[in-house]
Amino acid sequence: MRLRNIRGSREAIAENEYTVKSPESLKGRWNECFGNDAPLRLEIGCGKGRFIKELAKRERNVNFVGIEKYSSVLIRALEKLDEEDTNLRFIRMDAEVICDCFGENEADRIYLNFSDPWPKEKHAKRRLESRQFLERYRGILKKDGLIEFKTDNTGLFEFALEEAEFMKEYYEMVECTRDLHNDARLMEGNVMTEYEERFSAMGNPICKYILRRL
Ligand code: SAM
Image 1 (cartoon, rainbow, N blue to C red):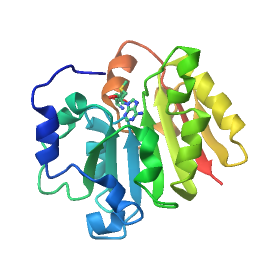
Image 2 (cartoon, protein in one colour):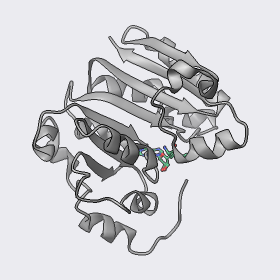
Image 3 (cartoon, rainbow, N blue to C red):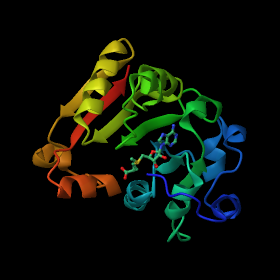
Image 4 (cartoon, rainbow, N blue to C red):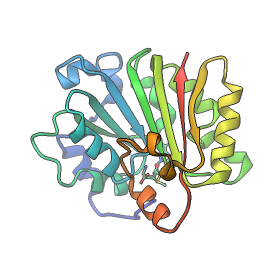
C-alpha cells in the first residue's frame, strides 16, 4: 500500500504531536514518552492505522506504537486522533532499524498484519516474518512476549511458519490457524485491519499465528 506523492506528508508528520521524531532517543525509555509503566505493544507496517487505533481505544491501560515506512500512508493514520489517544504514538521508519529504537525486553507484543509479501526469493529477508526480522524482534521482546501475525497470503504464511520453525530455539508457536474467521475462540476480540476487511470480503481465508518468545 503506497499512496504516492501526498504533498507535504513528510512535513505534516514532522509537525504532528502523535509522531515520535527521534525514536532512537527513547530506546529503553518509552515509559517516559507515555508517562507510565504500562506494557508496550508495536504494530509493524501499520498502514493507515485502523487496527492499532482501535486497539488503543479498547485497551487504555496499554501503550501502542505504530510503525510505518511511508509518509504517504502514515499521514492517513494521523487523521481523527483526539486527546483521549494518550496511549498511542506513531513512527515513520523502516522496521529494519527497530533495535536502534527499542531496548531489550521493552516490548510485550508485536503485531504483523498483512505484511508485504516480497515475492522474489532474493527479497525474502525483507519480509517482516523472516528469520532476520524474528532475530530483531527477539532483541526487543520480553520473555513470554508475543508476535501475532495475520495474512490472507498462503505463500507468505507457509514461509512464516518455516521461519518460525527455524527460530524454534527462541520462539514457541502457541496458536496457528489457516481460517481465523471460522475459529470462534481465536476470533474473540479480533480487530479487523483494512486489508483483513477487504480480503475476507473477497472470500479469502485469513491465516494467523501467535509466537511466544521463550
Ligand atoms: N497492516 C495494514 C493492514 O493490515 O491493513 C497494512 C498492510 S500493507 C499491505 C503493509 C504495510 O506495511 C504498508 O503500509 C508498508 O508500507 C508497511 N511496511 C512494509 N515493510 C515495512 C517495514 N520494513 N517497515 C515499516 N513498514 C513497512
